Length: 296
Image (cartoon, rainbow, N blue to C red):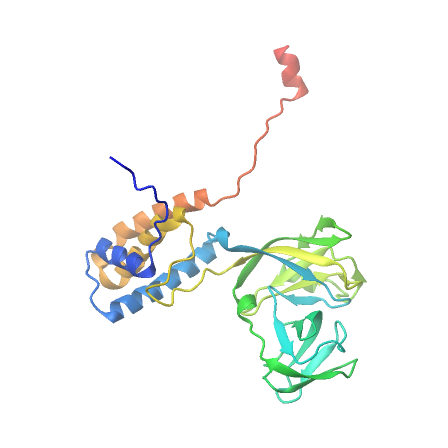
């Protein structure tokens, strides 16, 4: 018998929902059935994030610092403007209509700037003014916070200077609050992640230049399942865990007699998936000198 020769099996959301309903002993009949199942699927993704499972969504960010600026968004917030050239790094910009404020981090192009998490909401067509340069320009479009708000946590971070990377230590909230002078400048050696709805990273000491880079790996959310024709942002090895988890979540609402069985199966599949998702490193065992002498 001939094998298929294909390796592209990738169920869409509708197929996962159908599989889950079948495991619950149910038949998918209405649009509401599909809608409530998609909602359960997104709750399942939140559960995975809480358990630290979705390591395939790790993204590496390189953030060029701005001298004396302590706080940076996780990810990038870009403000599109008519012209950014006259603004200075680290100065505060203020919207003339919205009165929103933010600090300039970088100016990657003549018509954009990356900014800190704004206080307030900039609006298109308003004029912004720089606090130190007095430069003005018009906002082309309001900045999106989606990339930053999709961030779950930072896994590791280094500071890069002259192509040399040095690890920096993560602080707890209490440890960061106990730093007496957070505006002391120098080469950053510590960071704190403030995990708000729009999370930020705070570094210490405050940067002494605008050329160092903070490079960090951040864990981000799995893409939402907005439509039944969507595919799901997971690798092949997680298909069984997803199907089992969705069946369990649906059983909580539709098949209470199967909850315990489906929960046990989900937890079993989750353990297998989590084990497969762990980091691996080569293991080298070196015998001690005393062991070698004993053998000799």
